[in-house]
View (tube, rainbow, N blue to C red):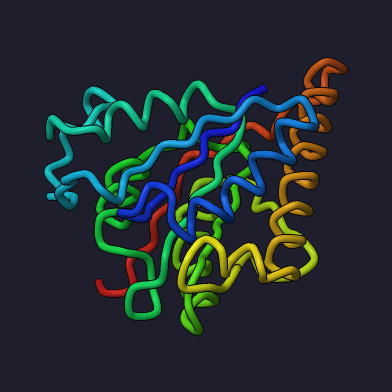
Length: 205
């Protein structure tokens, strides 16, 4: 089993990566493979709502987004981490997630979790914004003993956030447990619910 971990920070080994590494360590110790991909230092344009991906399943814009889509299709779970920019995720990560998840249904039933790291505030709203991508795609959201956040201005300060580090470790354990439960269910004939055709209701007639 494998979990794709997306580092939304432009700093490959900054505060966000330190929190993600703590989760990855716990997953690895539980026998789950991980891959960390840093996207915050890449040039990723926003979704243009052209609808091209509905025909091919791939984005028409030629950057790293299609590569991330393929990685997520082949992964069993997803973790997305972001620094806090004005009480939300950074712009590059938002552009990526808008395009990765646009019109997708192939990610359903993959466990996912959002992580936010900040010097002081804005983490709760950032985690909430990222979680929206999961809950609209039938992806179980993995929880822990507190909200998935850590604090510090650099990686060393994040390490000093003992509660934050513990939260990351428990998140890794909980995701590993859930992945194994899902695998056990599949092996015993317990499959996810059949999807229904999406009914869309307009409020303006």
